[in-house]
Image (cartoon, rainbow, N blue to C red; front, side, top):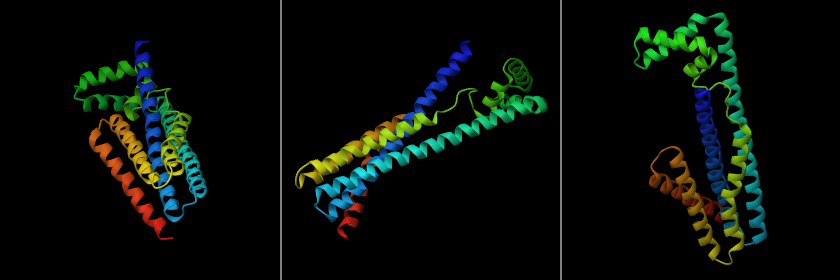
Length: 230
């Protein structure tokens, strides 16, 4: 009962991290794609309605695109994991000795003696054979799979939220102040996604934040140049 509870807690954390990952990626894409379109169009025309429609259309397209991509990606991963579980279920019936050897070798590679590894393998396989094999061979917690819908919705809303602030800055701030406001909006949202991504990946916060801000500013520069060509 305790083992099951621990596995469930671990998997729940993995599911949360996967949802956050999808959200961070969606937010980053929302910021860059929306601001790219906004800056390109704003550099080419001063018509506020045209700028707004272009930015809004791109925001919606980006959000739905990211959501569909996450759904397809996580669904594929889930299907692959289920296929692996079905395969191991069959092997346990048809070739139990090879499964026993796989578990034994796993613990030997961890530094456990051969004799003790065999004892551990026999004990685990006598209690929870399928759960043991899929965990050892694929690092899968039996019965717990990533949810594609969670990833899709996280990406959808994060992409929309990421692009919303630059869109509002470019379309609602009056006069030439809109450029400063847009740059600040991109810097702030890029810094936030950099901070969250570094925390999720246990990376360096300062480097991640600076990197994201620089990427955002480069995106603005490139698309401003493209807009000025037309």
